[in-house]
Image (cartoon, rainbow, N blue to C red; front, side, top):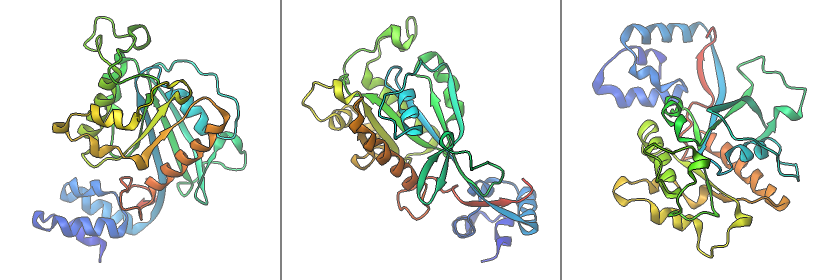
Length: 284
């Protein structure tokens, strides 16, 4: 197929255009542009193109769930000691924190041999969202289909346990009486609204070592989701991990890394991150 086909706007041929987009591995947002912008993009692509491997992983969840600790453990999976962290304020962006090499995530903090000097480098950025409700409005600005989402929840808490107002800074807000299950539903609803009904979510249950319940935590979450909102399709046991504070749990961190890479694969039938490895004009 010729790249010129995407420069011509014929609404009834949208399906053909989408097939061309997938075949040529170019941004599907091009389909939403007007004729002039499309034609300019096609010409610039002919003049030269570069393949871009950039991904964004967004960590969300209630305050105190262990999001920042998870980020640090993902960055340093070989460490036996639990990292010391402070509460995230607003948003922490760990830009180009991982380099992808031979199917592995390599922390940029552990190497000096890699420099991000070319778009050909395969890089991943982590975004750690603060759990306090005061920041939720601005967080939605960053929610995008061009991301992989990791939802973190404290499995030592029950879905019906009320969240500490001191921890989440909710006094006097609509979140004041929210329970842990409410925050899980909130984030799944937000991801669904801004990213689509088929967006897969990686679910990480923390504080496994403090969990005294005999109930299956994944099932507890599943049963707390209202049927009418169809939120259950975002989560799966295949994307579910339980981790604690013990050194043995670091193997689970490697498993999470492997799954994140799996979601980037264009060959993965479930994948949502089709932007990995797409072509754009080289001058951009």
